[in-house]
Every structure is written in C-alpha cells, then in structure tokens.
Length: 172
Image (cartoon, rainbow, N blue to C red; front, top):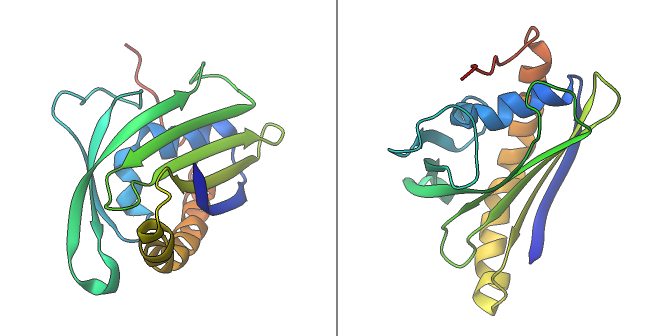
C-alpha cells in the first residue's frame, strides 16, 4: 500500500469526544469537510454509529469545478472497544471507489492525557501503475492538499468550541 497524503494535528478535547464526533456521526462530515457535499447512509445501514461494513454514499465536488460525483464509502475497520470510556487509541478506515486510486482513508486518534487528542489522517492506495502514480494521485493531491488543510483547521476549531459532550451515544 502506498501512502500519498498524511496530516497530523492536536485537538484539545478528550479522545472519545473526537472519535464520537468524527466517526459515529460521519454523516456530519459535509459540515466541516470542504468539497464534501453530502454523506448519506445507504438503506439497510441506518443504525447509529460506525461499524465494519457500514456503507455511505458520499457526494463530492470534482476537481476544477466540473461538477460532482457520488461514490460509496465502505467502512473497512473500526477499532474502538468502549465508546463511553477513555481509551488511548481509536481508529477507523474507509475506502471509496475512485478510478485509478480507490483511496483508503485512515483516521487515527491517540490520547495525549485526558484532554488532548492527536488526530492523524492519511490516504493511501493499493494501485501502483504509472497511470495511478503519474496522473491520478497527483490530480487527487492537487485538490485535497488545499481542501484538507482548510477542513482540518476548521474541524479542530469546531470540535474545540463544542460544549462537552459533543455527541451522546444512544443506549440500545
């Protein structure tokens, strides 16, 4: 697997609050992710929270303002044992179909004490051919570098400005 984008920053909130906001309410990503126009849960996956196999449809702006596209987001992995309790690390991984890249989005959270979280976001691909390496990845990077640097700054501000708790996980 080839990683082609990575960004790390600190959020001044406990790890469970950061994870709950970003993961368990993944449908709220259009509120903070530039270029993401809509995320909706596919029929049959409506239950609260995130789990392996859950599928969303993401509508995003295409490069150079040429329109938008909708592709499925599939949750590949969720590493969280106790959503109500403090954990030192949490993670989820999402993949999307995108020609020549099929990006894999890796969201990692690491507690830095009880009130700070290191958020590490990376994007990788399994594709290795010259079209991927010299055309598709550079094209994708030209769009996401700016979008994500602005989006992550806004996400940090948004989470830090929320009163505690940000998300209340419903009981079953």
